[in-house]
Length: 70
Image 1 (cartoon, rainbow, N blue to C red):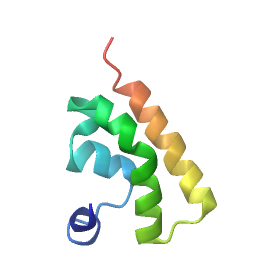
Image 2 (cartoon, helix red, strand yellow):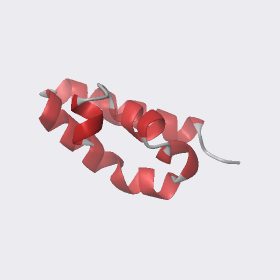
Image 3 (cartoon, one colour):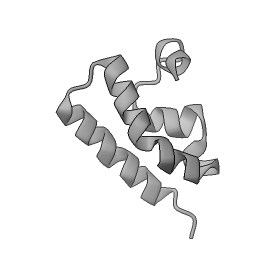
Image 4 (cartoon, rainbow, N blue to C red):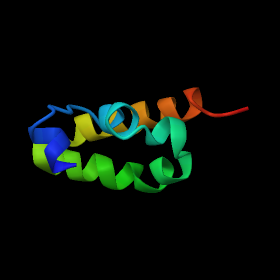
């Protein structure tokens, strides 16, 4: 994840979970398991405040719903 943040400029948790790893599409269980940790870790690395963390939580949950297999 550090490489993605600092070298590939991953700027959001969805960017990491969807574009950098593909977990939202191809390993949903892993994405769900690691989403809170991903948001927290990225927040620490990128200096996010509480409001940004809440936005990230909401955005990840929206993406989990959007990419849900029916």
